[in-house]
Image (spheres, rainbow, N blue to C red):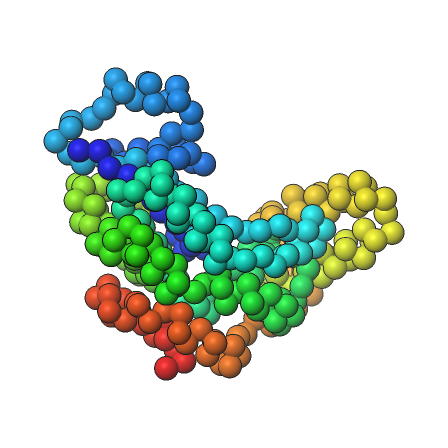
Length: 300
């Protein structure tokens, strides 16, 4: 019995963890950046002769964060986020996936608004962003509100693929009990339990690390304005590789030791969170969210 599983993301909601699980579970076929578990036709030919016992369900997995929201164009210097129609993109992706794999099971992992916005900001800094947190959340507010409109995305896929074929789980369960999280998916897919030893990867930067990376990024952005475009881009790429996206940057560690208590102020106003009031209503009816609704409905 062969089926299709499509994991839509979200980013910063356990995607890397799931990719490792997809790769290791014997009843799942997954290739990073692949579609339906494969990256080219030759892999399909090879797999035809290695099919496991047909009495057990096997899922061919498609998984990528951009399926939940395309990241859109990003400026090469300063990681400028350029506005685009997120919901139009989500609709197009949903229609495309349904045309290709109409009988798929859909997996969506959500994360509480406050923590996912903060974690998303850390990722923005990691790719070279130079805005301070308060400026960032106001400058891309319209994008953020559409990024994490859970009701819209869940409703979109429930309408297209059928409510019974859409699995929605909280990232908070993964953080609290990864085995229980995996068992929820296994039970819904009706596959055997597989012992999986997870490792936390890509942790968010703390406020000290963010402070110095943003400060250095701003120096690089200012300097880039005085350089030829090709040289400026090369400089910024070097900054991203050696500092922004380097968790063990010697320079950052030295600055933290020399200048302790320099921290980026990362706090979301209650009024900001209140604007997500109608973006997670569907979760209230899902039993698995019973103990986690406080992360999604703080404003009620």
